[in-house]
Length: 414
Image (cartoon, rainbow, N blue to C red; front, side, top):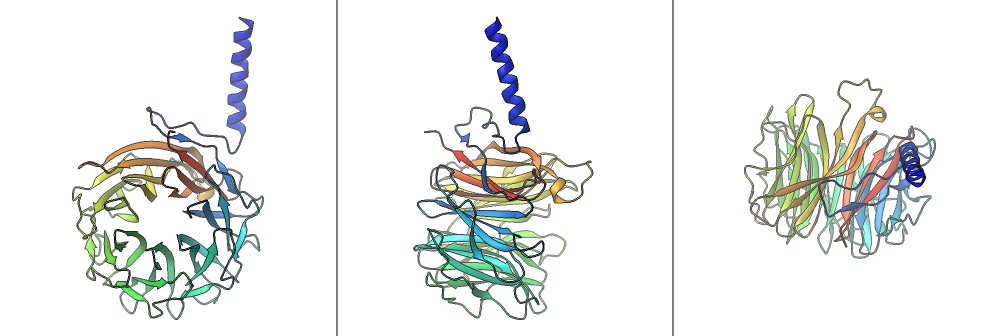
C-alpha cells in the first residue's frame, strides 16, 4: 500500500511539473492513431525578441526552418534559419542570418532544388514599397546571395511570395498591385544559379477585383498556382491555373476550384501523388470557419465538386498548410478558443495547433484528426513539411510573453 501511495504521489508530481513547463510535450493523438508526437522543438526562443512565423523545408538530409526576427530592433525584421535533423535536433541553435538588409523582411517561403534552397520574402529595404527578394542557401546554411536576389522590384507593391521547384527551376509567385485591376497574381522562374528568368514577370491572374493569397505546388509536369479570387464581387472563390515549366500560363481565365458560397480564403496546395490537393477556410458563421478541400487532376479537372471536409466545429479554424507523403497528406491549421475572452492582440489568443491526415487512395477522402499543440497562448501560422515518411510542423507561439518559433515531429509508426 505504501508503495502504491508513493507511486501515485510521483505521478501527480510529474503531471504538475509538465503543466508548469512552457514547452511540455503534448499527448499523442487519441482514438488509436498510428502516429505519435515528438517533444516540442525550440527552433528559436530568445528572450526579448520576436522570433516569428517559421516555415519549413526538406533537402533530403535535414529540414530547414526559416523565420523572421527583430534582433536588430523592435521594428526591423530580418531572416534567420536553422537546420533540424530528422530526429528533431536543432543544428544551428543561434540561427543563421539569411538576410539582414535594412528595414523589414517578412512573410517567408522556401523550396529545395539542385543543391540549394531558394528562400523568398516580402522586403521593405527601399522604404517606399513592398518588393519580393530571395536568396539561395546551401544545405549547410551557406548563403550564396547575401545581398539578396531582386525578384519583383519597381513601382508597384508586391507581397506574400511563395515558391516551388520543378526539377529544373524555381517558380516564385506573389500578389502585386495591378493597373486598375486591384491585386493580381504574378510570378517569375528563377534558376538554381540565381538568375531571374522572367524579369518582366509572368501574369498568372488579372481580372476585376482582387486576386490574392497565392500559393504554388509542382506535380506531374506542371505547377498549380491557387489564389483567392474576388472578380465576382461579394462571392469570392478559390481559383487556380496550371503553369508549365517553360512559364506558360495554361489556364489564363482561371480554374474555379471551389463552389463554396461561404467566402473561402487562405488556400493551401500540395501534390498528393496522383493529383493536387487544395484546402481552404470557409466562413461557416461570423465567428466560425471550417476547412474544406478538393482534389485537382494534372489536367486541371476538379475531382471533388461536392468538396471534402477537413475540419468542422464552432471555432475559428484557419490558415491551413498541407504536405503529402504519397497519397496521404497532413493538413495543419490553428483553431481559436478565444471567443468571448478579452484580448490585447494576437499574443493573448488561445489556440490549438491541429492537424488532419487525409487518405486520398479511395473515391472518398477520409480525414482523421491529430492534436499537435493543445490550447496554448498565441499559437499561430502553423506550417508543415515532410521527409517522405514523418512530418515536421512549425508554428509561432507566445507562451513566454514574446513570439517564439516552435516545432514538433509527427512520427509515423515504425
